[in-house]
Length: 443
Figure 1: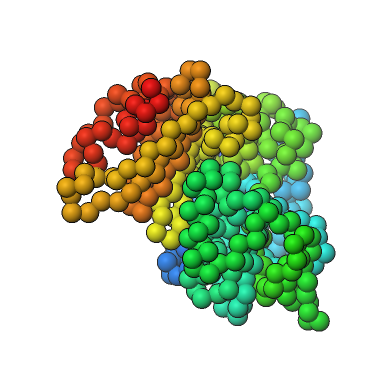
Figure 2: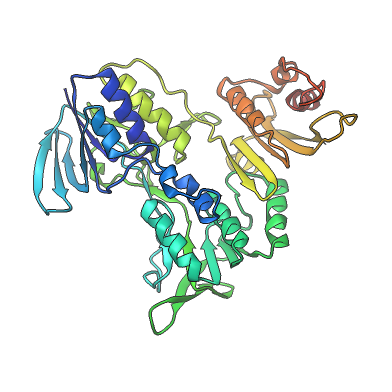
């Protein structure tokens, strides 16, 4: 069996490792345009802020490790086009310029995603940078050393983490986003208000509800300002964190996709074309709160999907369970996590929902220390079915969100959550667990 893999991203690395072990006689050829693989972009802000000293620690595999598994690694090779009917692809060696055609029996597309780049005046100015891969990370660190005023465009997870890292390095930081709140996809207002106050207290300038229209530069072609509909924000470095789009041009018109280009796969990671599989940020996923396909580019989704490609390559064996989009972030002292739909998203989707919010201490008050925790659970008004949850505290209780993720995946109701068996130990919690409290308040 001849297997071709395009892209050695998180999904690609998981798929390749699994296939090499499950099909030792297969010929696996991997095409990757970079000279490195498996970079954890979620660690860029940690590296920028000095928490991670050596960027090499942000790689969990290498081309050499893949080759030790018997895989043929063609790094610095760009795939130019794919013919899924003929089962061939055309690739180019980026070092020599040589082009050649490669045939396959099975194709695995793990091409990942790429940052959204607005086509605006000044976008090509020096010191306007992206934040996605290892090379971007090195550029950010190098340029940030000389920058005094840094503008971050995009208030999602990556942008938020970079803002904190830059602020802690003593930079003057401006956070710009066209939405009225930070992290609006993940959290409701009562949580984002706390995050915004934390940034404001540290001197971060928040330019929310503003749309970037262009970039200003000096005579040397270096960026000096970000122009929005509300004025100009001075900056000698700009980081674009405006979200991602799937890298799927190679298969456009050959497999089913969402309007944004995300490849639609079934529960076995099969595309609409026989013998073509896909996984990771290049794909749509089944979003369990709605049951619909959605584009949710997360490393956790990617590694699960990549692993399932290996399991299902020869015959359908293990189904994908879908995702709740479960995620978390640390903002200064606050540990924040969410899963499923926010109340804002549920209402926007036309759902009839209710919510409960629990604000309590994590441990009994007779203990020497305890900390406030806020939990919000969103559920269907008619059925009590749990749709989403958010949690915030200065101590790490984020694993509770993983528990609620399982609840959503299994279609549990607030009634059931009320009496789920959780342990009690005064060092860790109260007799009525926080999740039990949420369920009880709903009923």
